[in-house]
Length: 277
Length: 245
Image 1 (cartoon, each protein chain N blue to C red):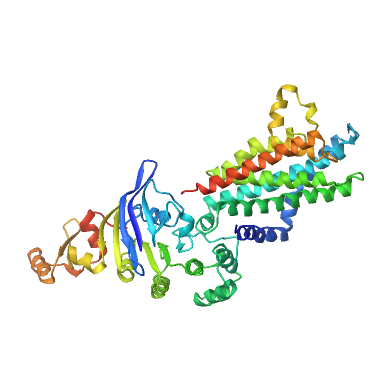
Image 2 (image 1 turned 180 degrees about the vertical axis):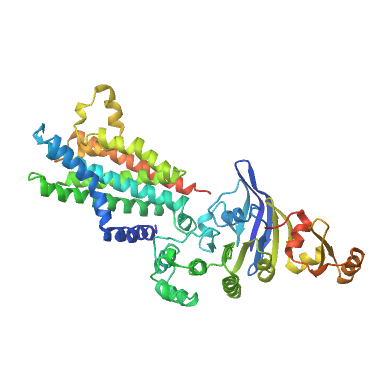
């Protein structure tokens, strides 16, 4: 269980987090969804002890992250948004140093297993700069999981990856959940939050503006979206609870139009009037 | 304490640099230029108290070289890992204490400082017949590397960009190399500047490296170096404990 209470953080004049509170259940994949600058990375930095909040508290399995960060570090691992792999070390050495820092037992065997599992065995002696973007992400995930964390933080884990690699990463994230880990995922990819997360918190300007399962959130604003271009070429969207209501409205507007199922971006637009990307 | 992974990381990188001839060459080049320009060139025929000039210069060059290498390596490594590669996040998120991080970095800095000084010692044996080692000299070099590695941690943690590290180097480290008794005795410095010179840590290394045994002045310099080392080390721990992005 992760409990976040009244978290605030300011960088200069910019309020990154504004009295943010939410709870994450053990064993779920919780997504923090929002546009760039919404505060997602700040939340991850505070929860993973590399940033200190101005006010508020965070507890991970009952341990206070702000007051006793050293006690929580055994429980968590993080795949950061900015690749922080050691470019001066090889794939194997990256796993070795990380494992030693986390006092992982039977480390050599675990590194061997991780290299196999993440399909990096043939590149074990390669430097990070010699790996493709997808391989670097897999190495970041392998590194994070080698310490067998209870809680895994993934900050924009698939940004910049092509769709095929993205799906491979999604499979690895699902597997982490199946192994009993709690996963906190930040993303600005709607589909990612939709297909992976048990629950999603939507962040805007450092505040949580909605929370729930993707289905509940969509149901809340309406499951069907009517889209039509106006005379100036702008896309006009209307959200409806039922497909019938959408068709009734569409007939009044006249063709051409399209009706589709709503997604989390529609929820975000409905709540904030802004787009996510 | 779990300092070993921090130290091991630095040693893996150090070993790799050693295998490139360029590293040893660049470590040696500046002291060798000084040695030839001042020791074998300008200073030939000079005597400073009981030393010929080369005999005076060589211990100072060892102190200078150990300072440069231990300080620069640690300060640059922390600065780059913290600001650019972000590898430093990995240390902060790991269940190791701030003292382990500082100890691992400082120990690696000591090794690099002593290694660089050892290269000058070899050159010393090759170029000067009377050049010899004693335990005070070795102790002074180790403590000097400890002191400047710890200062490297402090500077590496407070700088906001890589250029900042160069600024500290240009305003503090390089002038210290020239005015604290490396190239000429501090007795030659105008009396008005002497208090400032005695405040600078390298002055005391330069006093110690030229002693055969610890007399009163030697003990005093040793205590000053120890005090600076402890101060920088504790400051480094405090900065890492307070780290926040």
